[in-house]
Length: 344
Image (cartoon, rainbow, N blue to C red):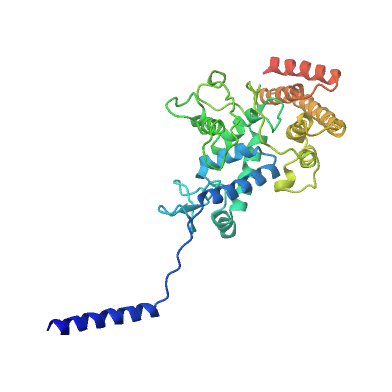
């Protein structure tokens, strides 16, 4: 009996080995290289940031706050991106690496691109951040290379509301303060550039409401230059059009009667850059913008309403913050600013 039982066991084992030979072996998955993935993604963020004249370190911090640098959900065991599961925010709206929530849900093509095209998602995020830079309160001379000047734009990227006012809920950090804190620390293995940044003091902000969009603010000191790669052509020249083509001075200077206000930030960034040796062309563009902006401020002051005086004061103040290239212009801006303030 024992011999018979042994023979049966051997037969089963031999049959099992034979069947295993017929089944193709599963391929061994290569180990996921997290550092290599983050390095490649970091390069994408840097390229897109410089393309839109946004400090890369700032964009990296915003991306970290929004998604932890994730376009997709990740495998909890391997950390590998699950390419069939785009990252959707807890609100059910935010999509992908920049958590884009401003889209038409019925536009399936755009929604699909936001979910599955990380480059497109980054690009839309840069466009939104640029819109907030232009629409929200002015800080200093508008130099895009100064990290402190981005405070209100970052605030607006999340939500231009009182809950992002540091005086509203003192028990938690606001979105923009958290982003600014990230820029002062090595918060991810792929990020080594950490220049630090100075926040606007809480005492200067209103108690609850967000600041008026027509307000203007001095750049808090000390200031910190970013890692923006200055390209004077992209800061000045324009081919017209939308998206990245509008991320320069000339586009905005020619875009609308108030466009010089937005253009100056690009021009001043190029003017202040040590990489730009010849200031002649930029000086001419700044002077031209000054002229247009002062004319617009004068027209607003003539309207005689509190809101028009507030905006006029902002425009006069903006000219004062720029390079002092003509004493007559500086004096006109100073006098106009004082006059507009007295009427508010």
